[in-house]
Image 1 (cartoon, rainbow, N blue to C red):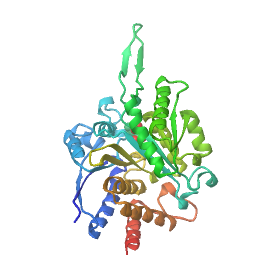
Image 2 (cartoon, rainbow, N blue to C red):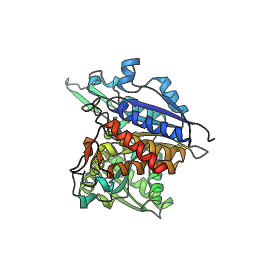
Image 3 (cartoon, helix red, strand yellow):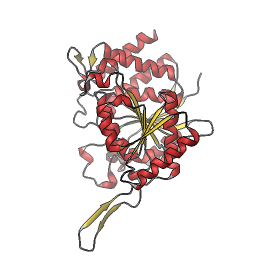
Image 4 (cartoon, rainbow, N blue to C red):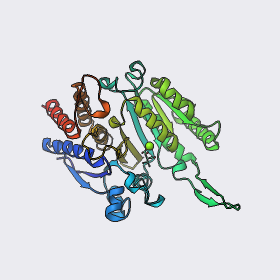
Length: 370
Ligand code: IPM
Ligand code: MG
């Protein structure tokens, strides 16, 4: 029997709990097949935790996250909690998890699956076969930089400010993740900043260039300004293999890249920390879509991004590549069979809700594992 794997599940708000329910069915399916047993804990985060405990993430939840082998996160936030003030935002849950678990490399793939090539708003010829990876720095930059605040000026008017800041070490460790991923892919990294405007951007470029020359000369490295990158992603996205960029640019560019694939409802992500002495990395997995309050509770959300996040978890945290592939193949096959949630509907396909989609994936898993 393999050792139990400690898994913390945090469904959160909006569609989070609905799509996580479908992941739980996949986990139950795996337990029944006895390939693995999960030691699973579920807890509240975001608005749900604010309602129940008066905080977006309780200290005991943070402790559980630190003690677990991997965290599977849903999504947080919604209009209900928007008026509580800056210090009571549901989003603080994910920001605190990233910061305190030191999860500095956010891996955001944008992959166009063949059955979905027509779901993109871009022409099929532009996106067919797309497979790019954005590596977004996720514990630094303007998200956490000091000083930040709003101050009152001498004339009584106000001034709001945030700080973009990166150290050599912060840039190097996230760039290493990008270079190492590129070695397993097409061997190309594009580093993205605004070296033409920002001092921290110029510094970013210098650090990446030096690291590349020192340790990763076998990987091809290019540089691009962030605005140009946004344009190039829409013009010709297949020119990219791995993009490495700061927290804020990665936030923007990954939303943009996700829509190349047709739907936010399809895309998983992983956020990783540094490897420990045994080579294991702390990690959190979450879909790229948010809590989608507009469709929450209607049973129509696409569960695939959450299920595929679980597949990523199996691959990167538990070394279960076969099981990850099985889940990914089941999702692709269900799409190819013509079943679609509303977000990826196309002419000639049949519209289904969240739980019917989950059921179809389970049935496909049965078939593939038979
Ligand atoms: C994301 C989200 C978060 C971010 C929010 C919810 C804080 O947009 O994961 O991309 O800005 O990082
Ligand atoms: Mg975002």
